[in-house]
Length: 371
Ligand code: OSB
Ligand code: MG
Image (cartoon, rainbow, N blue to C red):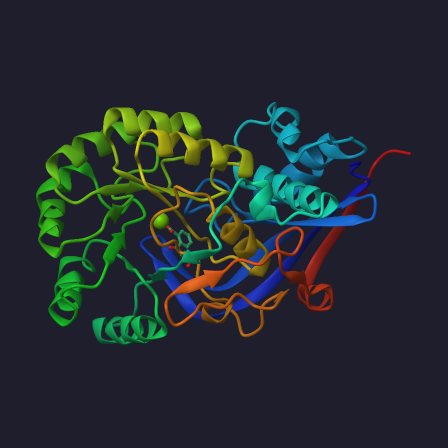
């Protein structure tokens, strides 16, 4: 397939509920969508970079010029047999993995559509439904958090993850566990602690958590290895795992027992699959993380989650938890058993609502192959 043009769009979508982590609160998303126009087929991707450089150094206003100046020109006019070839073409650009993934994922969708295959099959997936958990942000009060948990449990979600930070941690986990002693529970610190706080972090062990996600710095795998030796609770790494090499180092050094794979954070499906396969051979379970995606990124996460070693419930949940109206049809729905059914349509498996996207677009640029 030949990439004739690439369209970038920024859309703005207010969240149904604000989302707060240890690094801040988000009320509304600015999202970059990528369309790869390939000989009559349009592949769609989403760049998951945030509104601010807080979760990672990448953010939406660094992703856009990286795509227009470096990444899109590297694909325009090219013939591809497989989206995997993209990895070699963008290797010269250091970092900027979320920007790279936005484009790569659009190419995967285009390839799947051209081959009339569902994307999940092209990726090598085998599941016909996937298990879902939810990530619940920091609330204004513990009572509000308990209400949110109650709602999500009633909806059928199979794992509750709460955000923690100093001052919103042991007290909160204590209240949750005294109300629900046996739910599958985990927490995510988004790097809010330091290794000096090991005695404090050891107290998390009493809550029988499935995992504690990213307690320390994003760029410190070695310190996580030191911390893991002090904890009974499994550490799961999110921010620290940016490619297959960091995953290999984390596993070898004993820095984690579980890995969260986010396709944007690791630079696209090719690298995500590589990490998945390596974790599988090392018996490290993985699950699919979320970045408050629109339906397009959500559909990509669903396809990735069909790979065999995604054996823990992901942060992949229903569209209506985030959006009054999502940009795909049908919206992502979760059954009362906490499962998402996988569709067999070619590509991502959901119809992209271009009319709605057009209304939400605040900025648009189309780059064409040189004649
Ligand atoms: O650390 O997993 C995270 C959202 C934005 C940035 C980082 C994270 C998150 C979430 C939300 O936890 C997951 C989701 O529901 O999309
Ligand atoms: Mg996380």
